[in-house]
Image (cartoon, rainbow, N blue to C red; front, side):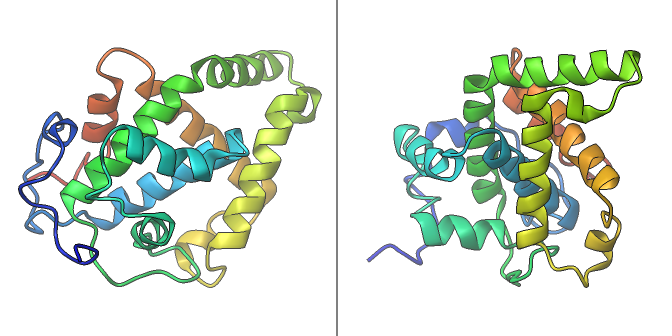
Length: 202
């Protein structure tokens, strides 16, 4: 069985399209990167009710099964986010992180129209000084993001306490939406990947 064996010779070509950053942790993703990846996936789930299943389907379509072996394994990878209620102490390798970011980029491109509509709606509401509740679809996204965050994150963690109000969680949800938009342009996945290591590269 290959369930617990590390990816090696069968590493998909797509993984090689993302460069290896020079990290002090020897190919282990730093905390900030793990948090950001999980929050981006959380944002996709808030945008798309079938987002969780779409992640697994995308992993199969892009032949990433050697790195994401199923629903439980995907949960384990996302639980390397230390803000989670049931966070895992296992590291997240660069190859695993690349697979997740490639999936994020693929799904973000599928959701491009919706992402742009929501960000445009937010800008228009801000210009008119109206509450976010005036845009039904945006309010729905924000509500789902808040619900997902509160259900899955550990309220005793300092990083989670920083988002104790609806307003702060809405700001986080909008920040993730803007990051997803980054994926939708030319070389978007590569640009997102590089941004996840800002300040971490030696």
